Length: 326
Image (cartoon, rainbow, N blue to C red; front, side):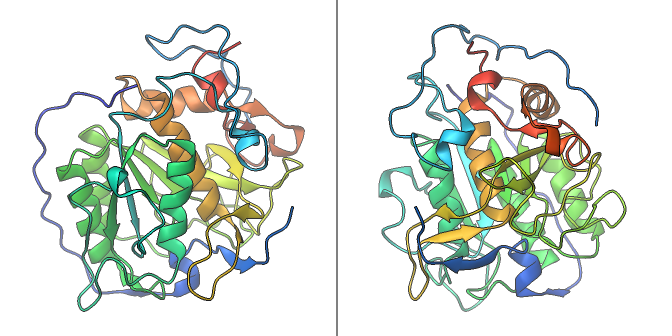
């Protein structure tokens, strides 16, 4: 599976105010790590272009939660090779990812903090993308400080940088209560240039259709907004939802990660759900527009009765179904 061929991108000129966002908001309400522990009916599923939809099987490394819930197929081409995923977050500590998958343009945009000055959240997001799409390149753009604070202007700069680097997928496991015109413009430009946005729904237990949060609340056709579910398939981890705003759900409760510093082994919330979904997007790209990717992943989501009025697709993202595997 390879990324899309697109014309060269230019770096967007982004302005914006210096509004300070809180830790809990920028971490998409991701619950504190804990000790490790064991609307509308969708259209008929369609196969990804160029993928033969038969006899895919399942990857042997995904028998446990949460990867088992994503139904990852055993296809050589479904490993993310040739795809670049930009993780816009709080950085990356050494040893979390193999050096071979870290894109050369990875860098910090935060004054006074290097890329590896991370409290753990950014590292966890990059790790989860890699677990799902082990051959994808990961462009780590540090837009938040180690404690999760940042500005919309810096996040917009990171989005523009991801687009300029021809990222195929841009992960935003962050959010705030107010919209920002410059950030919205940067996201729109990224979609126009071919990037799929994967955005955490946030974790205030809110209906985003009534109480919008951003960037999930921007009306962008190439954005896949993701809620978190537990192992029963119900909204969990204090995740927000929205039968119109949120496209799909993904596993987001007690998700295992590598401990960073004083942190421990599992995290919960829409942040890890979005990271896992971004990995699935990387597996299933095959030359479509961002909107077509979002529509296909929504149409092939695995239905769950508890999600009918919670997410637009009514289901949980399903990699095998998105690839047309029977």
